[in-house]
Image (cartoon, rainbow, N blue to C red; front, side):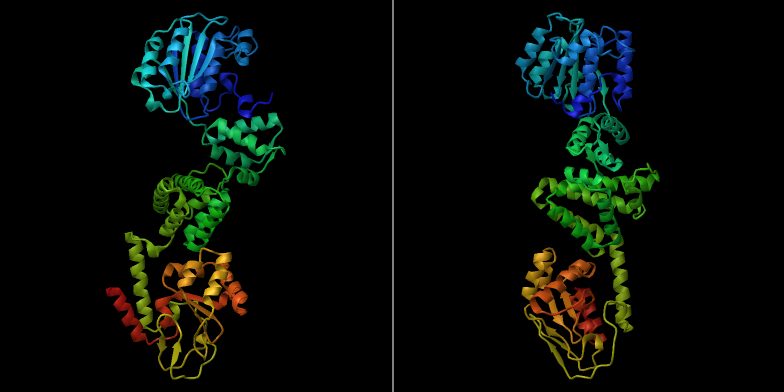
Length: 532
């Protein structure tokens, strides 16, 4: 009969229990010296060895030939317990037997002596699920059981155990298993099962198991499938986990302030049908590792990218990001349907200086504004708008040019126009709505901003797109892929060839600057905006 790996490879002796030496050493000593307690309470996270140790105790105290506190595993008593045929070792799930009647039945059976073993052992799993009346019914028996009875209670939620029960048991706290211990154990299992696994795959499984042996072996079994070969990429796809490379790339985008690239990665996660909330928790854990490495300068040798990410941020910045992302995670838990929105808002908040309101960000924005005003006063417009095409040749003077835009018309003064905007001025693009609809088919995230934008074609053949907010500008300006989507849509709908470099983007209020409105008027507009 087939057995799951976590059952097949369950430790048979205390020495095989990984990561809980502080407990197994004491239990071995008690069995070896015969000073076994009448009641034990094992508490700790799932999959850390509580039930396993309970079964080893049951075998060790009944073993006919114990070996240094460990059961021999070959005597009649050990075989009977392993087969599950003996009636002297009883396992009870308190989650499904939590009423007082179940405990009364257990209590009534305590009076009978063991049928074939030395001790009768009761293993009660998830004991915190018992009702108050059930706990009360157990108290007297738990305090003074017959000398041939041993109670072993196991729980993952210690705070739900009444103090009266705690005081009657010898308590052991099981710890989460370290990733290195999990990896060592999985390697032993792989060797025994003929499974080939990359180190990166084992590290990924160890991270996702969160210190649980059972979860780790279940995931290992799932990933092995029929091929018996586990790659890091394959394990990530099967388990829906993010690779260290994906997490590192997203962190790098945030460090560079590349909002568009960061949002694009979140959108890719969303479109892959993966759970954004699960990914978000992975990313927070990854940033936490980077913060620890940044503060302690300790490198554990794992190739998970956290050490490299730690070099991209100051510790204070990492703390700020983690706090913002933790808040977003709480929002995701409350409203799962808006998880993607909360993720995007958090990324914008920590990446874009323009939307942040902390003192440092406000100081940066004021400094930038002062610099822009100074450059405008000196006529250094190119320092503010470096993407503007260089002047090719002097254009012929024109009297007046009207730009056909909605909802109002923009009039430029009678002056010579630079070659950057062409000698024939700007004209509105007919069919822009159709272009945007075409863009939406390839990149839905930028379509809403494009609908509200003003799109003009310059006399030089370039396309000028003016948005109503700086954030929309940064998304298109910093994403060559998004620009290509726009260029492809223009060709598809309008039949006009333009390259990504021929698409110029800026905020709407700067349209007058690009077509060279008088410098005095520009400064006056900025002053008015500052006052409002």
